[in-house]
Every structure is written in C-alpha cells, then in structure tokens.
Image (tube, rainbow, N blue to C red; front, side, top):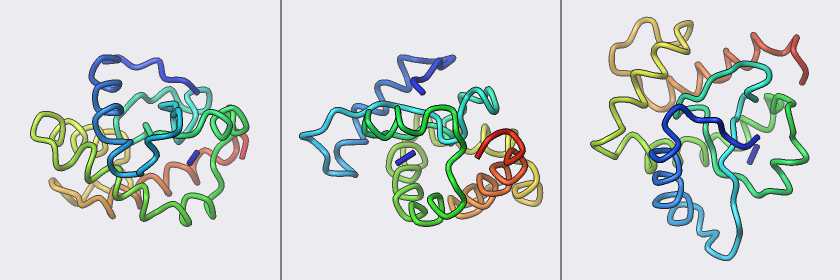
Length: 136
C-alpha cells in the first residue's frame, strides 16, 4: 500500500501484523513488510495508526516519500479495514490505537473523545497535507 519500522513496541507490532494482515488482505502467498504510511524520516511517529502492511517492492519504491493524497484516498477502504480489524476490534490494543491517534492527529480529532476510523483517516489526510513541504 504505501521503511521498516523502528517501533517502540516491536513485539506488539509484529504480533498484530502477523495475526491480522494476512487474514484481512488475503495475501497469504506474499511476503509483507510493516511500514510507515507517513515516513519516519518526514515525521518520527511509530503510532499504530501510521503502520501498514506492504509488499516489499512497494515499500522500497516508496522509500521516504509521502504517499500522494490520491493514493491514500484510493486506499481509504483498505486502510479503514486494516485499522478496524488489526487494532480497533482488538481489546488489548484498540484503546491504545485511539489514544495515539488523538494525541498525534489533534487537528481532526480535537472534538471527539471517541473518534471513528473515518475521523482518524481525516486526521491522517490533514497530517499528510501538513507534511507536503517535506517531500511528496
């Protein structure tokens, strides 16, 4: 969809990735990387909302570039499904996912103590727009 993660909680991220990415994306025959949507070089953020499964060739091609707004909009349904299945529906990490999104994406989420996945996506789009001066 959208490099390699330097996560503050790598065991959790890897466990979540293994358990849910193959199930929701039906990519059992592919090797996948866990990567940042908004690249770490542009914004050092290891929050769960910023981590996605991606094919290694896509990961390497993207490098440290921001995804285009169009590519994020095209992937919106997949992103929302990933967040819902891998994070929001999981008792152990659902609250952490939402708390991290509220803290990191305040522009779009300031009015809600319990934002929806759609609200968080809007916050991602806003944060991406703020970072376009970096390299898109």
